[in-house]
Length: 103
Image (cartoon, rainbow, N blue to C red):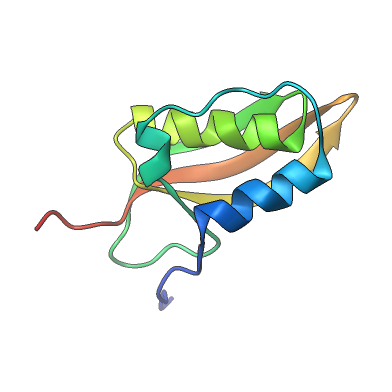
């Protein structure tokens, strides 16, 4: 199977999108999270770090948790697989990846 370049979604757009979906208290992002890209397709150049299932009180909260986990594991990208509402919370399923090569 041939993999293509990741489809990167700018962090500012992601934040605005999820903020529009929900309101209320959310998990704060760490400084390292600012360097994590949201992607929809992994590539040959990406190394898989870990499968992540993040749960939060809102979709924004769950996504922030997933980004923080990715950053804490040394990842620079999070490949989103799904977002689901479970009871009164949200669950995000995806994979933490290392895609950027050190210069």
